[in-house]
Image (tube, rainbow, N blue to C red; front, side):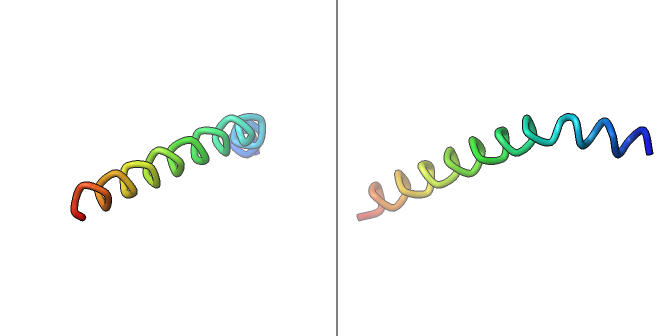
Length: 37
């Protein structure tokens, strides 16, 4: 229960970090594709 509350409290931060990580990954993939052309 306590763990759930901690996770729930951190959810917005975790989601923000995930979004940032995804954007970074996408950018990295795009850069790789551009280099391979």
